[in-house]
Image 1: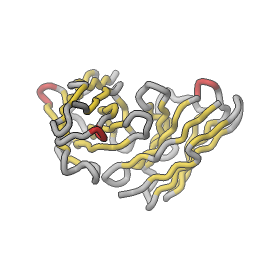
Image 2: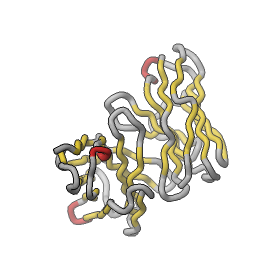
Image 3: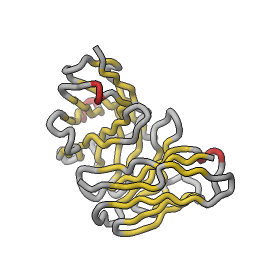
Image 4: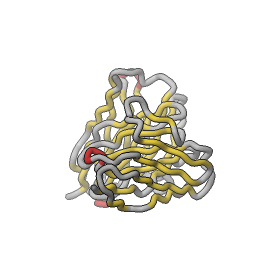
Length: 117
Length: 106
């Protein structure tokens, strides 16, 4: 049974870098999947941040691509998100997720990140 | 970017009603469309992918249809447990994009 677990600081100061890790268990991170990050500001809808394919190719939201890095560490079975120069607008629940080829996402439980001084 | 427009944004219905949510794409997405259900305080859950394929374990009262740029999610007999927000997502073209969501109230 696939499990995805987000981890990282729940509070980040404005202008600093948000860093989150998603640990994958119950399945291999090295197989033919797309690993993604999605966020949801409080009371609002879902926003796709970006993803990384098993091939190593990365894809990003047009509005966030200048600030986002996504990487995979197969030795630790996790993938990571870095978002630089955060503001209060980046406050959201951040989800990691896996997409099977031709299918939609399987989701982690999400983690709330608040940007505040 | 492909824009995904859902309607209505809120839907009020009664137990037993047949409910339909519409999702329109700004360009063809070749049936690469997924539907998710999100209950309050929970992560989204995949219901349907590739427009009409039911995810394993999802009740058959959920169904999807459509092609090209217009898609629908139907709940055949609404139950209290179906109270949730439903989102569509296209995965035909990067960047992937979500619809704005439809909140179903009972």
